[in-house]
Image 1 (cartoon, one colour):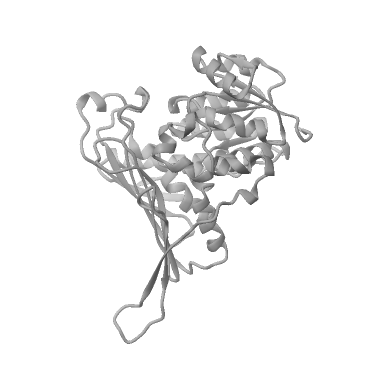
Image 2 (spheres, helix red, strand yellow; image 1 turned 180 degrees about the vertical axis):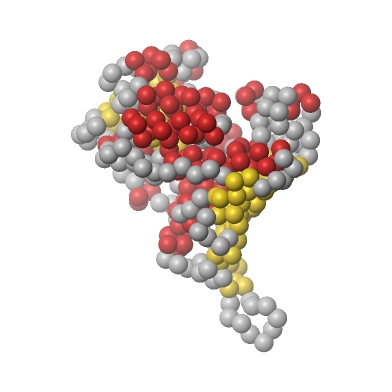
Length: 383
């Protein structure tokens, strides 16, 4: 598909949290029109009126039947992500989707196959690898400033009581990519093996939804081609801890830790020279991480700092700090992948590899920590 500048028509499907992306697409210089879709008529009317978007649809099927819609961004329940993404690409439209990519290895395999077979462009919209903190660390990492890596850690701890019913009792580590993706993206590799243990106990009523008894799961992953392991903890229920969505990475020169509370600054550790004392001195700094709006078209730069969804009172902003300014970066990468007719930075194989790690980890937890090998998906796309 060869699209001229400003020719792209994008349908945004799912308008509760998804409404956050509507004005970003509207402002993007490569987008001609934004179409809204939601099964809730009141939500559809509210969002459409707020952003002056008159073209509105009530079902994904209606979106897919419209020949002039080029791309679809799914912000729908996680139980639908795999099947709907496949449906979108099979219809001849490009697809962006919020995390996770799917809920089974079979769906992931189908997702990768459909992207290859159709030549459509796919992107999983993983916020964690476009936050200002991640972009800052990536530049330092690419310059070799961390030295030889020794360890990495990720965490996503969040109380999800009161969220939509499909979250209730969900296996926490199966929703892993916010915590694991930054490390995999930095190292450019994938997770090979995992041992995972569940912790705590859900009520029988909560456990019955997905057959998952654990409110918390902790995994140790071994990575391919890198001599480090990664520890990841994910919680959803029964854990008295404020929201954190974080990663840490340690080398023999520098270490970095994401802030543990939302109003804190991240930490940078610098290893000193060996002296006559036991152990080396380690310098500790709090960082003012720069915003990277400069990486974006001027028209969407303001969205790295401003929430537009209901004044910013959605839980992902109250608890997650607006996803670290990532949303316009995600939109820009997806749009440019479509316009330039290239694979996105988080194509189907990458999304499948990141998602599969969490699915395998939960399998391990259900087997009392037994080692599980994580399948790998390749990147050979249709030209």
